[in-house]
Length: 118
Image (cartoon, rainbow, N blue to C red):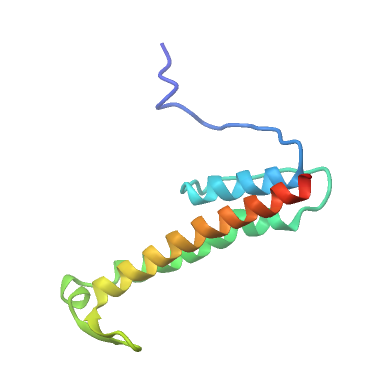
């Protein structure tokens, strides 16, 4: 018997609009999937951005964090207008800000898209 949960090799989906395709591609990217692709019968440049931009940034951050030692994470740094904190707290703040930025951007895009439908 095949265990599909551990042997999944791909998923295919069809969307009714370019906006839905791009949104789905961004969600797949944000979920951490790296080996992705999308097809459209016409050029859709947003797909390239949706599938690649986040991956490049995530790779840059991951590679940089991998070079930091435990001692470097506890090193104090000066943050403009906020005083002193540690590298670790600074990294946490950057990641948290990115999370909230993405969440609010998605919310706002959904609201804009719902206005276009009317």
